[in-house]
Amino acid sequence: MLKKKKIWMPAALILIVAAYLFIYNRPIELQKAVLMSTPIMYTKGSIKPYAKIPSDVAAPRVNVFYATDRQPTDSSIIDPLYYSNDRSMHLYLGRALVRFGDADMAWADIEHDSLRRDRHHVIPLEIEKVEMVHKFGSPVELLTDSLREQASKDDPFIKAIKERLSHSDDKSIFLFVPGFKVNFAYPVLVAAELWHYLGYTGAFIAYSWPSRQRIRDYFSDVETAAFTAQNFRMLLLYLAQIKDVEHIHILSYSAGARIVSQALHEIRLMAHGLPMADVRADLKISRVIFTAPDIDMMLFSSRYRDGFADIVNSITIYTNANDTALNWALRFLGWPRLGAPGELGLTPGELRSLESIARTKSIDVSAAEDAASGNGHGYFVKSPWVSTDILLTLKYGTPPLKRGLTRQKDDFAWEFPKSYPETIREAIQQQP
Image (cartoon, rainbow, N blue to C red):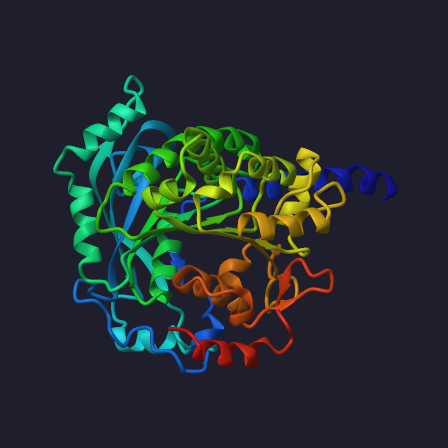
């Protein structure tokens, strides 16, 4: 019997490991999602985000703008993903129709449940239709020529953005840039739920870069992020040409920090020698948020040395000591990640100087409710406290103290106090 155990136990272990790797490395084919946890700012009923839904928003179906440098596919029942994992030198712009709730759920029920802490019903999200309305850029065309060409055309995407903003008091564009291991649909669905909790104000654009959907493609996606930064830079310069737009706000998640920081860094280098006040006015880039940023901390900090923060109004960085995904990234790559800084990162004193020099705020979410949920990496939608803080920052640009946060002992980072549910009620009353 002992010999049989010795033979079969290793074999069983190998089979278990092989099955785990097969399941864990399967491509994620996400067309549907479930609405994120309700931000705590809404659960007390003091804010009514849907009291005045714009006339062009036909909830529970909403049109979310998207931009992608994925290659288009021939959408079918067999392959319904619209865009593949392959890179494109073109930038495709369009709209995705997202439905909230099941077909038999009324908007009144969706609205009621989406503002509850404990919901009566699960609220699914699903992409029903994708419409590409414009594209620009090419492998043989200089970006400056491409942008100049777009400015002179009757661009249908720009017309759609203008039409959307004509129905909104807030003339802002909100951009969401996801991390790796997701398909085209993921950022669109996340953008839809974030826009839902912004009360459908402004225009929301999901940026879907060509990441792959297997954990083993992590290193490949690192290079793709560097590639796609050029297209994202082109998108920012393109959107800045829209006269109706007053502000462009950017929310990045995980490896999306690589794309956003590189694009901003490149724009800053392009603007060398120009008056920064004029550059900021032309670019209109206002609030830039990095959540769970998976980027080498020292690489990110080196971009401050070139003044990349000069071209935006504010930068907010969210970190989490409970983020095991970033701790694994540290093991793979050997350097501390910005979202979970380690011993080899910048000192508190150096980080504190960034706040005074570059209008940067650091938020430690470790004490926030559900910040350690799962692997501690997706807290921006899983933690009702963190999502509240992000929404207040995106929509109003409210300083941390007025968002109910407190200073840490080292006087650098901000954190969530235990009394946050109570303090946020007072903070909410002070919002515009």
